[in-house]
Image 1 (cartoon, rainbow, N blue to C red):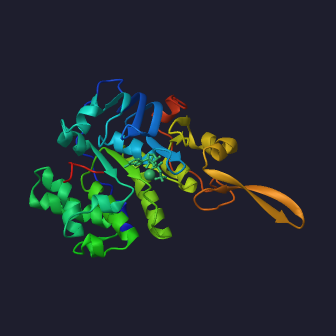
Image 2 (image 1 turned 60 degrees about the horizontal axis):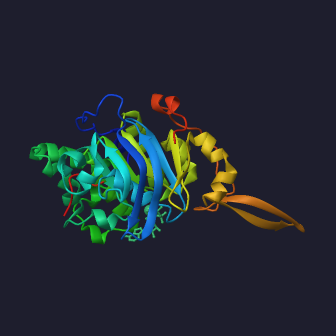
Length: 316
Ligand SMILES: Nc1ncnc2c1ncn2[C@@H]1O[C@H](COP(=O)(O)OP(=O)(O)OP(=O)(O)O)[C@@H](O)[C@H]1O
Ligand SMILES: [Mg+2]
């Protein structure tokens, strides 16, 4: 992937008007149960504002993917009320106004196989822009830009099933970038990426944030959190929010991280003495608090509210 390829940040689509003073997403005592049986989310009260960069943390099964699907209008709450982009998300989930909604909100699914269904990578990346009624030239420009941003221009003519896991992930991200949504939801975007691609993606996420996009990123990688987020929301294993605040404060709370199963205490024997070290649950690091400095200023929203409480046009 060349430097030039990652310098450009696609322009966002026209911004949908949301009532002044209204959050982009507002969840009021929201719960979600699969098949009315498996509780994935419970009692979620939160608001996400335009331009925020949010990291969503939680152990396996804590509800991160379910919450992202709800923000994307794939599913509506089974309990409580939720508004998204000025409308009722249950209506979007029921198929009302989905086209308009998904011009503005794109979700990169955790599993890229859900996102890639066309004969070639280029067809997948072009799918969203083609729905928008753009000219051939405009569609091509968006595709070139998205493929270059993810460093996969050379894979444009390959079938998605011929790609490696990491290449599929990059293609899935490109298929959302090509829509230029204002809100980008990323479900474990760095999982299965090699180190260079991971940091290129971190850089891209930073630049999307600087360009004013609203970003919500579910991740297990604590080291990238201060770089990609101004706000961290932690879900516990019961699908409830147990922390919501700035990265430095949340990541410094070791008891919270252990309780939420984001790090674990690991006992070691050294020279006859027993020590315990917190480990990053995902990567086994000794120190979950990154040493690399944050690359970006906090948004005004993050300063104002320190601790309150892809998709694209729907695919077949
Ligand atoms: N399609 C489904 N049908 C039934 N239960 C489901 C389904 N998808 C998820 N669940 C359950 O809902 C809960 C939340 O799952 P979810 O995928 O949202 O967690 P997650 O935080 O994204 O986990 P991970 O870190 O493993 O990706 C879990 O208990 C899970 O078993
Ligand atoms: Mg998940």
